[in-house]
Length: 172
Image (tube, rainbow, N blue to C red; front, side, top):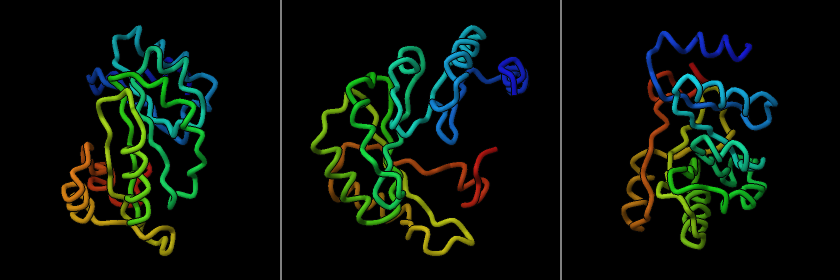
């Protein structure tokens, strides 16, 4: 879609908050232009990124939600490290927890890292239907209990799109 088509498609929803997600939106050449165009239309823009690509340009004007990949994702490469210092207080860091190993890894990571953000989120990952063995998944109750037991300075978040549209939902 062209940028003007994107804007035209969201106008009927009469929202002022737009989340650009993907894949990885910072791999798209037109993302900076899309952010600029949305902001000219008075939209508040957030970008969900895995943080492996520099957030420097996009993070100056958009709110960043850095989804740091945990070990069971198979995408935990560590490139996000170079972006942590670029985060703003208004940005968020998110960990999707799919196993006890992920939880322990994320817990150690947040307890040993100084984040400039106020919000750190832990979200339970549920195993997608028809994809056995992809990752074990954890229950929301288990994760909430672990966070409370360890008194972690995080906010619990459920992947609402999975709850509303099912575990195989890729976006609506």
